[in-house]
Amino acid sequence: MNRRAHPTTWKTLELGMTPTTDETSAVMHTGHAGHAGRAGRARRAGRATALGLCSALLLTACCAPKPAATTPGGPAEPAPADPQPTEPTAPTGPTAPLTTPLAAPLPPDVILPASADPSVSFAVWFRVGSQDDPKGKEGLAWLTAQMVARAATASHRYDEILTLLYPMAASYSASVDREMTVLSGRSSKTDGAAFLQLLREAMTQPAFDAADFERLRTEGLSSLEKSLRYSLDEELGKAILHEALYRGSAYAHPVIGTVAGLKALTLDDVKAFWARHYAMDQAIYGLAGGWSEELKGAFLGTRTELPTPQSAGPAPAPAAAPVTGKKVVLVQKPGADASISFGHVLDVRRGDPDFAALYLAASWLGEHRNSSSHLYQVIREARGLNYGDYAYVEAYPGGGFRQLPPANVGRRKQAFEVWIRTLPNDNAVFALRAALREVDTLVAQGLTAQQFELTRNFLKKYVLHYAASTQDRLLWSLDDAFYGLPAPHLARLRAELDALTLEQVNAAIKKHLRTSALTIAISTGAAEKLKAQLTSGAATPPTYATPKPEAVLTEDKIIAAYPLGISADHVTIVPVEQMFAQGTR
Image 1 (cartoon, rainbow, N blue to C red):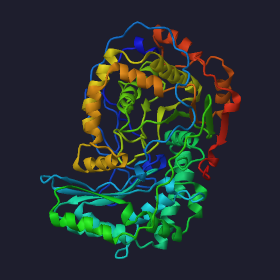
Image 2 (image 1 turned 180 degrees about the horizontal axis):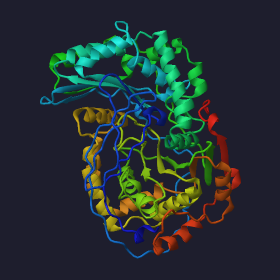
Image 3 (image 1 turned 30 degrees about the vertical axis):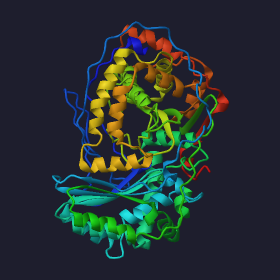
Image 4 (image 1 turned 135 degrees about the vertical axis):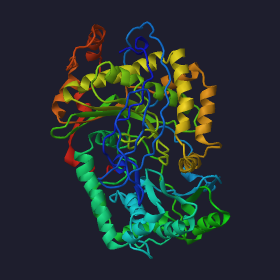
């Protein structure tokens, strides 16, 4: 549906959630006591209730409830001519690398006093991630973090740690992404000293118990071989896209690793990786809440107990796989509906001049879990094809259960990504055409003044929910250190939104977004059929279970024939059992 002819109505945030695990989709939050998840359903009665979700697959993922923000939409405008697929206005291969945050001197520690807060939040960011996995041993960064956060220490067995944490109602966890590993925890002020002792032992005195190693590695293998391949269709689709976007680089494999990589690991590998990357010169400390000076000194003093520096330099910045035209990866999964993700790498990130403009554009196009966003209105609201359709210009792992952007997934390379949630195979190519058409329209025509103002006003309020708690603010502050920002990102973003003009946003869209050179990833039970539809050029009209208005049916004829320009030699079919079997480097 042409975006200018389609009115926007800001409705209740879409909050339906499906059980998943964060680790299978790029970032792992693994915790001890107190990390029970909560499942939620969409409620469309003038308010939104955001609930977390419990994962029973591998790790305990946490998602804090946040209030929703809404804003009214604008009236429809006359429809201009239908756009044609855009030509790239930026190089399709690797471009000059941006300044590398990890190569800079160690950022200062982050100290956020909040004397009225009855709790204390601790965090240590280690400058290491899955990109540091050795070739053939993918999963080493993830498994090492688990051996710190979910295993015995020199003083206590793992079950004893859980017993000690339980009466404190406290926990600590490890979050692992491509370039960041963060060990964090939270306790009451009263229990701060006792909690810190357990956290200190985990961080500086891991036992590296053989039984813990086998338990955690087995869980990792199960997540890859069973959960990600066969239970998490939408996360699978996104993982397929990321592997294709960064194929041949250290970004390509899932954070949890590969099957061959995990099987190749030894306990000695973990010990050596910990000694090299959890050293005192790789750690940035964070403390927030109602801490005392004594507790602060004790926490910061644990740095001297970390391993001696071994000159562990940062891994090279990742390079995107060059793309000419549209490249399609179809993963054949027996009996599966279609889960679609597509996108291309961006050389724009936080702190860059065009970041705020692209962030606003992505919010209008497909704000995560927001039923007012444009793709949602076109594909779900008007046609009922699937559950939701979203767009991103930053990594957003675990989107299946998350409502707001995660912290601690800082990356030197980001991507523009569109996520079309699962729908029947018969309508998959039509939905893909609809989404590509909307992106092409956005690039060709830009936003209107009204859409720009509505989205800007919405975002300025909505970002206030990103870091609602003291612990959230601490973790987001570590991201500020990663990107080397001179001021906190969320405050900076609101100021940049205030200063933005419509012309700047539309210029950034035209400069950085495209559909003529991008990667499309689809998990499906009908790979051969979809390949034929994608490459034949024939129209792919949708099928509906209920009648649709004449205006929708008329536009469907245009969408069904929208040119894809995909050649058969640009389509690859991979059996699902081969996915994540080994690395691509």
